[in-house]
Amino acid sequence: MMSTPPTASPRRAEMLAAAAAAVTVVLWASAFVSIRSAGDAYSPGALALGRLLAGALTLGVICLVRRETWPPRSAWHGIAISGVLWFGFYMVALNWGEQQVDAGTAALVVNTGPILIALLGSRLLGDPMPPRLLAGMAVSFAGAVTVGLSMSGEGGSSVLGVVLCLLAAVAYAGGVVAQKPALGSASPLQVTTFGCLVGAVVCLPFAGLLVQEAAKAPASATLNMVYLGVFPTALAFTTWAYALSRTTASRMGATTYAAPALVVLMSWLFLGEVPGPLTLAGGALCLAGVAVSRSRSRAAARAAVPGAVPEQRPEQAPDSAR
Image 1: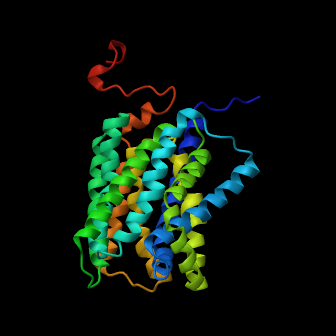
Image 2 (image 1 turned 90 degrees about the vertical axis):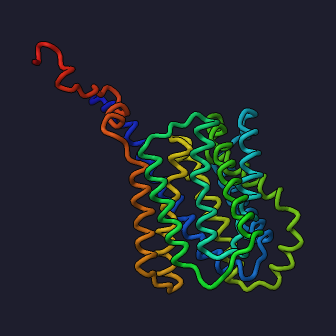
Image 3 (image 1 turned 60 degrees about the vertical axis):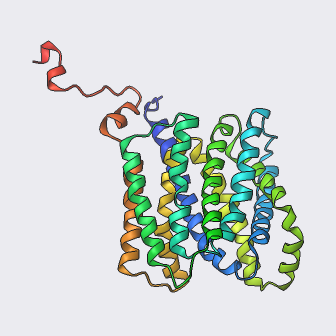
């Protein structure tokens, strides 16, 4: 019987994690179109609650089919914090904040999230901060701001809106960093499902508003809210947790900078918003930065391969090779 090469399993795991991260980014970018539609009929809190309820119901069915067990006690601390901050507070604050500021200001403030993840991950989780990651995040942040500014309209910015977007970015970063340790003892599906349930509980004060607005909202807005719950929440947050469990929080945060470039493409395809040269340039910067942040030096790549022998410089070669 042929033995499996020792490099097969790590490479396959890395490819699966990359694919999961790609699914997450694509679905989160698609949420832009749905939020634009649903946000016209639903207030920020009601939209967040409706989205979370749809997501929790979907995840609950999946857990029943897969016979998923209750998360271990050691994971609940991270699940509760991420549920309150990321699933609950973040969604309400972001929905509300983006109604108060123009797209450029929102892009500038909200896209500080991955930078905060890197800083918190380094401080609290001991995540490494290689130069390539820092350089890639700087390039992507510049691209995200460029995209936001180029797509801004005549809207203004309020102090309240800036504060809400900043709080959303902080909550996003805190939720990701809290979620990472929980994935050490619970499955991605468990962490996502119960985090979503915690977020829904946090948003229950908006239940009355949701019922009132759902009675008046057009079917298209409600369908978009359900879409947000099933795909960008239930599916995308699960694939995010899967990828996060196999890499650092800092590297995953940097990956989300691909979203602005995809938003440009989807706005073009589904909303008829033709991007200008500055928007395209910003999207290209986002993708270039993600590529740099996820790349590794030759030495690091060789070290990640089991059994790999580090390269020897000529002056370090054994005497027999000289």
